[in-house]
Image (cartoon, rainbow, N blue to C red; front, side):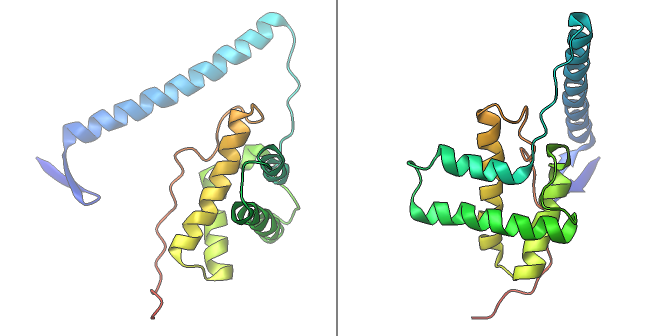
Length: 165
C-alpha cells in the first residue's frame, strides 16, 4: 500500500521507520538529561544555571567576530538586534527573553512578525532568519548555550501574493 506524503511517495514501512528514529532520538535526549540530573545528585552539588537572553548573544557575536566580518554583515546583525527588540516588545511585552523560550515556536513567531510588519520578500526574510540561526550557532560553539535551539527549525509556509514587477 502506498501513501502520498508531502509530494513524495513512501510506503507505510518507511513512515514507520522514520517514526521509530524520531522516538529513539527523543529517548536519547531524555536519557542524557536524566544522566545529567543523576550526576548532579551523585556529586551533591547543583550547578547554578546561567540566565541567558537573546539580545546579549547578538552583541557577543558582533564582538567575537568584529575583525572577521565585513560592513554589510555587521549591518545585518545590527538590524537583527533592532528588529528583535521590536519583536520582543510586541510579542512578549518585554525587552528580552530567556533561553528556555528559544526554539521553533520563537523562530516561527519571529518569522511571522517580520513578514506581517515589514512585508519582506521571502528571500529577504530567509536571510534575516539565517542571521538569527548564526547567532545561536555561534553561542553554542562558544559554550554559552548548551544546545543550538534553532537547529532543525524550519519555517512554516506562508501564503502570500507575489509582488508584481
